[in-house]
Image (cartoon, rainbow, N blue to C red; front, side, top):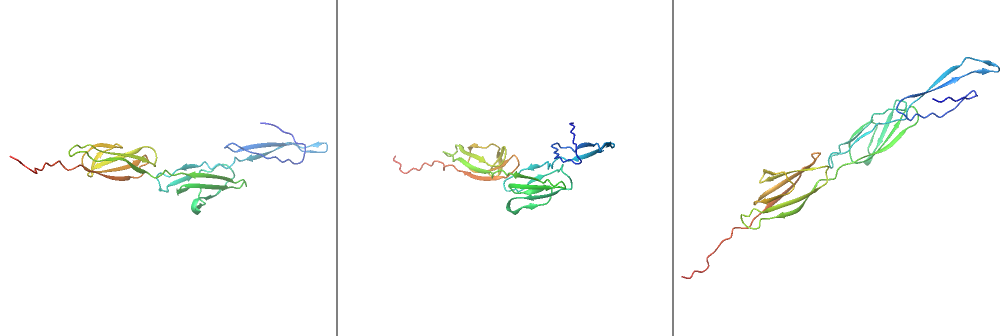
Length: 220
């Protein structure tokens, strides 16, 4: 602590508390009138910390899901608090926490009885749409060869991808690409780490007809 001395009948100071706890400042008054001194007395001033919303942002889980949320646990300042949120597409709310959010910027203003409002802008993000692109779709070269192939690439979503292939609607593979294929209908279902999707693609692998030998002429 630091002591300061003021030889006057009134003082004025700006007190700032940058901690998260309530602080106090103690002033000791030594009254004097002429040559007569009175008993000392103390004045304790409470200094509240600044408003802290303790914000937690949860981004949108899947493309177009609009399930983002921003939660607050307001501390500091001098309660009671009033909150105003403003967001994209005319969004507004007076709730301390907001949910079912679309992607975009959300501005929070908190007012209290201390007259020093808090304002901050937060961004809610969403993953891009999962897109399945065909890299290779190769039909069978010869009848009975079973050498068809399908290769795909995936973008968007979040994290790792999970693949479920079926062959004529029967579970077949869980790899990204498949090969050594017989003539059939193959379907792939792709999801991401948030189980977003699924995105579906259907492929039909064909093979040539069997070779036929036709006798056109016979000479004995």
